[in-house]
Amino acid sequence: MYLFIKIRKKNQMKKTIQTSSVVKSLVSSRERKLDLLLAIYITSIVAAELMGAKTFPLFFLNASVAIFTLPITFIINDVVTEVEGKARSLSFMRSTFIILFLLALFNILAISLPPSTRSAAFEPAYQTIFAKSLRMTLASLVAFFLAERLDIYIFAKIRARLQGSGLWLRSNASNIISLFFDTSIFMFLAFFDGANANFVWSLVLPYWGLKCLFSMVETPITYLAVNWLKKS
Image (cartoon, rainbow, N blue to C red; front, side, top):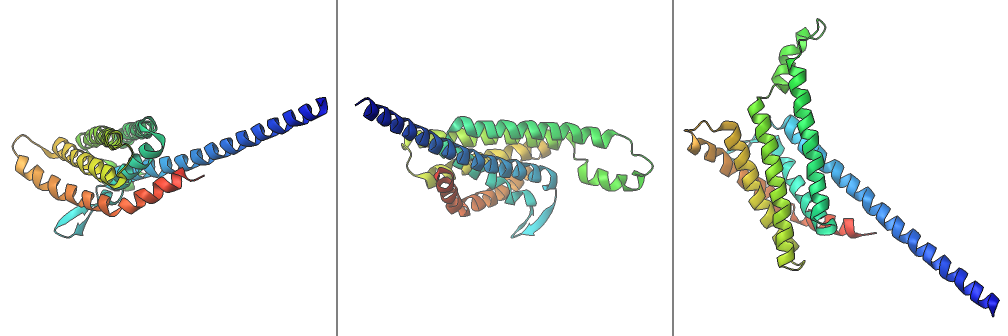
């Protein structure tokens, strides 16, 4: 009898250890996927910050190349909020904001330092590429901080109201609203001079419309990414 009880306890302990190993493996896998999403999120924001000054002809306007990367960040917000919750999405946003802030400080330092003799020939090109105005840098930081937080809060609020259903509605509604604020805040902080509101709105509305179009086209990617992140 004693031997039977001992064997039974051993089997129970073995099952507990196996269950613990499975849970640990799932958590580890989820964390690796979140690391990948964070890397894509940060890369998209930094790419928009560094390369967004270039424009290309698209339909009826000259669009910034950042139009390809910014909708990705809002999709990742939605995916992470859906699976991991609002707190984890906000941690993504805070980490990226710190990176952007430090990048802006280093950028200001780099363009302020005098070039050495070896670098003097390339200084005009360096200044052309990296010497964005402080006003545009601050506009970018403020727009990112406010719009990304807004996207996360709207998505989480609608999710709670709909009790977890209607992912396509939550994703597009939060993206459309937050992209409007992102575009409006940046354009007004960067270009408004007190008397050119009509000109600024003429920049805001087409850019916002294109960003929304990209976001809606990427809706199937949101579903795929949510399923991928949930999968063990």
